[in-house]
Image (cartoon, rainbow, N blue to C red):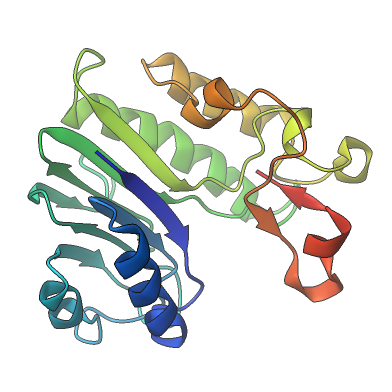
Length: 215
């Protein structure tokens, strides 16, 4: 089964690209982050015409997560399954062809001294509780999306640049490691152990062409 993930940074702005990519690659499941639209604005009919069922948790101009599936979509959980619901639209889960799929858009954290950083750490701990509530380690589970955490130094272009910054701090890496310890595996790193393989580049300074990325 082909499961893909994409932070589209506004589905309204990039819908034609998403449609084109789906047509070319035909994923069984596509997890989308930062839809940045309300429930009413979500183009469910467009995806339905392409053969996909959809589940979306929206918040207007911010955040927003969705799961598209052409292999079944049941047991949908919008927001956390346990604890206080998150005020922001950052997590949605469903079962797709027997696989528990969790689509996440983890908080950025902003700065180490910022309240948003503590929110990020709490959010990750609640994510682990969520996964433990909806699934067992012996089941097929995929937790994917935009984690806003680089697991190790080989996941950033220059570790020295990120000293004292979010995304690479030890507490962030610890909560991500704790999540994996539940029974998950970093599939990408297992298949591709080499460094300098990134999934994000800052568009503002030509980072892609410079090779200045993160994963």
